[in-house]
Picture: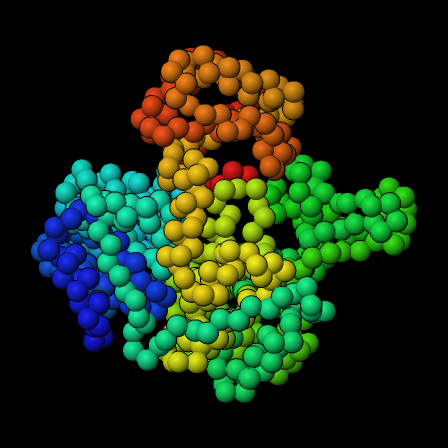
Length: 531
């Protein structure tokens, strides 16, 4: 049984007193948040009540289930989207018949049919995957909050990098009760972080990162390399005429996948053969720019031929059982270097990992979205947190072309509060959430002119209903990704300080709106991305 730190014991005691309905466990990576969650769950279950434990990814669902099944005497149900209908039905029957009291799952598990709910735990609360990208577009955190309020249960959230909305709530006296975990458990200390400016490097693996990998492997320790971009390279261009190859169905560049020897669109799945001649000017002076996980894997294998290397991204994970096999092999020490995308950044716990290399920290930094800085910072902190969780020698190398960027600088200082306070001030000045509520209305269809006309039609309609000018139209134009799967996309971004009024006026406009038969409208409340 793990010995609790003073901070962990205080957090458990405070939560179980139930003086508040919502608590936030705000702790550094490796501080033992999961143990606090499980101890609280044990106390709730001992009172004869049920607990829903939400995690952001199916991978984490499986990992957590293995950890707790014995601890809770097999009275655990698992819910996630990969279950077959018969498997899901079996789990639901166990829940309805009160055969289990702990339900673990991804976002849809928030709807589990518990009859005596005592607590909902939202682990890694900041994760975007808690928001459904398809209709109905719900956020699991908001559903959990409403369900706990209705059923008299406690909502317990936690993360090392809270969402800015949750951070703002913690600052309010009558908001969420904040509980801090400031130190790592056991012998773990926070890793040292170093930033490498790629402007002065000639290789995608810098000299410093190569040195640290060599040093780490010599000690029989493990390395995680992170790059949030899959494929081999992602930009085909002609050096003679400037032609750029894009998907014929989407307004995005095709990505070269060396394993498939194909150019692939990551939005609609379109594929075509690799080109060696420019289709415009017939020049053979063509090439590829940029790099993804496949290229990094090739580079690492050439630099460290004796090391055991595995790649974990959406492409490699398509093989059934590959993710679990790879993570188990890495945990056992049979893999030396694990290279991956966001799949290696979330909640995973590996005792032998001493070095984390962030191959390119800039990939999401310049996305035209007001949350891009928050997402970049959160990802840097989370992936850095995989290093040195059980020893004092953790090291993180962040490679970037923009070392002066605030997200990079605050990550280097490991100053989470400093970043959030600055970002909150920027949001306050610009009127973005959490200081306003937003609705993103996306119109899409095959004919660009009709989509544009429908967007303007709805904008005029809602402006006519807004008699007291309580709403602000932040955008009424093409989406940053103007075309996906042969559908042109325009959006109308509506904002206001009063959530009830924003929702009322949008709902009223929708009830008065007569849609075109060839234009589809998507309504996204509190959007997490605006692409």
